[in-house]
Image (tube, rainbow, N blue to C red):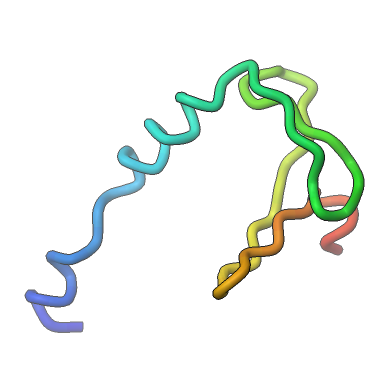
Length: 62
C-alpha cells in the first residue's frame, strides 16, 4: 500500500469514538437478536461490509 493510500485511513480510535456515541442505545440486529452498546452483557456483533451492510450477532455469524 502506498503512503498516499495509507493516509486515507483513520485509526481505530476514530471508530471507537463512533461506537462510544452509541453507548446505552438499543438495536435490533438483522438476525433478530438485540444489542445494547456499552452494556457489559451485550452481544458481540459482526458487520458484513458492502453496499448494504449486514449486521448480525456473533452467535448467528458462526
